[in-house]
Image (cartoon, rainbow, N blue to C red; front, side, top):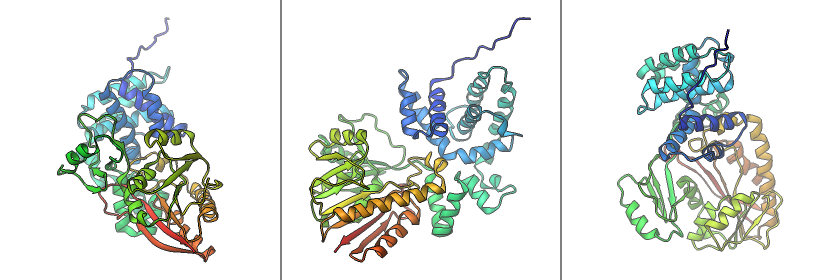
Length: 426
């Protein structure tokens, strides 16, 4: 008897890219944006497919917990499916539940084809049956009551808000029901689109064009916040610098015009905060441990003095009047932008981060001028990395006092949350 070999149709490009990126992200611990960039670089791809692949990656990661529960209602033994198959079924279910512009049969079709790609495994009947059931749920899948079946309150919140239970517990316990619910709702959405026009050759024209739009959420200096998902028909040349508007608010809340100079941006990344300080006409130099980010900063903001260094041990080339610390943190305030974080973080990571944050603060205290300031910013919602970190630092150093503390309002339309503290050193 001849062997019967299944010939499978190649996956549509957007799904192929999304599955590859998500697999790298969830199983090889790559950052989702980096994983997506790698998957997209494998060959020419239609811009519409780039858009769909991006939407599938971020949408699936935002709603992965909810999707897992929906699938568990129809899958007897989810553990039997290999990771790649489980992921494909999940992404197809995401399309069926959340992407109205893709017809259900198209999602079932590519997923069933993919299920045949594992030799000898008979998954196609299972995929077909489960995904059709998902398709029949209709609006029921968007009704919170569907997720309350046999659930305690924490279990329900974990399913509905698609968040690991430790995180739901942390926010509920720390911030109370009302605020925690706002944070949980925000992390399921896309972040606002933030743009900083400082240094753009057409800054004035673009600014007056965008500032007049009725949908603008907020304006600060040369920065604007536009609703999530805003895209431009034609991006001006050079492209607009994207920058979290909530991050800008955190810098502004700490009153950068009052900081003694020069200012050392000691965790500069690609220079988003340096750009704001330059717009404020402040003297600033910058450092970061990552070569790639520093070279991006030099390309975007030529003329800024930079050096490669870890803020926990760095010795600056001259004594700074102010040190700006955009501390490495657990990123729990920006899950809308980096939804993979919630599936990767473990509670023990938080302790390691607090040790590093304390080392960075101690080093800053050694390096800053007397009478100088230390400005601290994080993009997380975890008191141990925010208020409690600063309180412990103040308790250990009586020559340091807290001048100002700020957090993004819980009802902010930006869907991102930052914490800031301004310390003055006697």
